Image 1 (cartoon, rainbow, N blue to C red):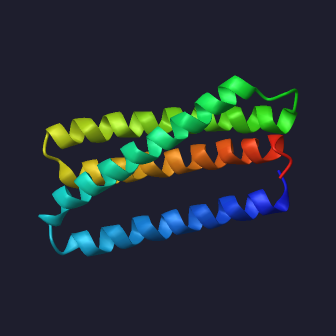
Image 2 (image 1 turned 180 degrees about the vertical axis):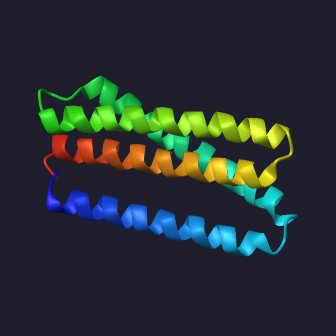
Length: 131
C-alpha cells in the first residue's frame, strides 16, 4: 500500500471516529433523539452499502489481474462488507425491538465497515488504473 492510500485510510478512520463520538454526546441528553439518529444512520449505511456493492461488482468483473496488493485489497473489501452486513442485521433487530440507541450505534458501525470496504475497493481500482 503506498503512502497516499495509507493517509487516505487514516483520515477516513479519524473522521469516522469523530463522527461517532460527537453523535453519542448529542444524544445522551435527549433519549428521544436516538430514534432519529437510528433512522439517519440506517439510511447512511444502506446508501453506502449500495456504493460498496457496486465497486465490488466492478472489481469482480476486472479481477486482481495477478496483482497481490489488489488481491489483498479485494479480500479486505469483502471482509469489511461482511462485517458491515453483520452489524446492519443486528441494528435491524434492535430497531424492531425499539432499542434505538443500540440500533443507532449498530448502523453507525455498519456504515464504518462499509466505508472501510469502499476504501479498500477504491484503492484496488486505483492500483489497477495506475493511479
